[in-house]
Amino acid sequence: MRIGFLRRKNHTTASFRVILLGFLGLILLGALILTLPLCSRDGTATSFPDALFTSVSAACVTGLVVQDTATHWSVWGQLVILILIQIGGLGVITVALTFFRLWGRRISLAQRNMMQQSISAPQVGGIVRRAGFILRGSVCIELCGALLLLPVFARDFGFAKGLWYSAFHSVSAFCNAGFDLMGVREKYSSLTGYGSDLLVNTVIMLLIIIGGIGFLVWEDLRENRFRFRRLRLHTKLVLVTSALLILIPAALNFLLEYRELPLKERILGSLFQSVTTRTAGFNTTDLTKMSEPGILQMIGLMLIGGSPGSTAGGMKTTTAAVLFLAGVTVFRRRDDVECFRRRIGQDVIRNAGTILFLYLMLFSVGSAILSRVEGLPLLTCMFETSSAVGTVGLTLGITPGLHQSSRIILMVLMFLGRVGALTLVYALLPGGKNPPGRKPLDTVTVG
Image (tube, rainbow, N blue to C red):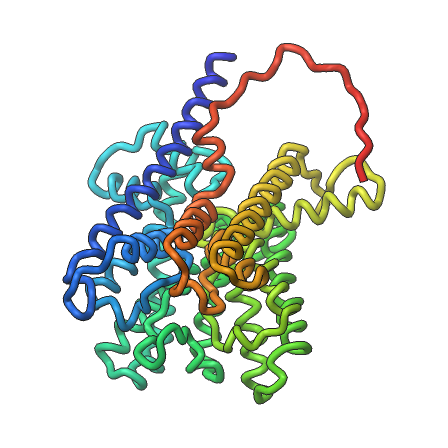
């Protein structure tokens, strides 16, 4: 029994290492391809640092850019970026092993374990079937999104270009990437030209939400036909927390921001910015006009991010929910953390606390270094680093002008934000053996 436990632990550690190496390999390959003259609009080779930053941002579904996607990259370059977004959003391991399956290759137990870790599945059983469901569902959702966006983009750019724009923005929104092709109107303008367009706002928001709630939630909703009482605790937490993190910030945005806009644009802008801030990276309003409280609110939302096993990054909605429930339990002086008539295990609470600590450490250290190196206000640097570590892609406009050292910091944060800080720790540090006995219990005063 002990030997079997050690083998499972070794398999898990190896899985985390393969996930890390898979993302690193994808990023490096994408960067090398993007340096080719074929990928730039003017036919000249792109510098490797710029190509690497773009590849990291695309593979980690972030959206921060140092070159405008529409004006710098050719159609081939944009296609490479789109492929990186798609693979990065669904997971390198999931995509690779699914293709192996299509080619008739048998998926070993170790490979199934890697796939389980990649999509945060609760168990190995049925993992290949689950991966097929994820791929089929993703393609169908992205196709529907592209078809819904087509009338608007075909009207504005012609049918052929509108078709490409519809597909690109549908995949980018579903994968919570935030890359856009609207630089043909104004560089780095994102979707600000569609702030009053109900169709574009609605479709993009739905794609972001569906991609960000997680594949495990999809499956649970399909199996239980949206009957809330029969859903797993994980699904209930994701749905309730996501709804609160959309509606409450949207109401605050409406009351405190965008007061100069007409009512329709104010409502759409408030709701859209609340949805996109938690890892999508699109914007329909000028972020530089946000108040400091509004920027702080966005920083918090970016750090939380989407849900586990989704195309989104960040600490995850369930992490925030578990920590909030743990705080409520302390205030109520109870022993067990409970939610929806279920008890949450202590290991889950410890993991949530560790994740919070790691993300806050990465965020604060990155912000301080960026502010020191660039000589920029700390709040501005906090916004940029939270956008990177949360794999959001929103920016106050400083990323293209950063020094190379600051760009490296953002690339590291994007990578860690996508693969997960705990994944890096588990991959690099060997798992320790539990001691044969427990040490004497003592007390420590906190607070």
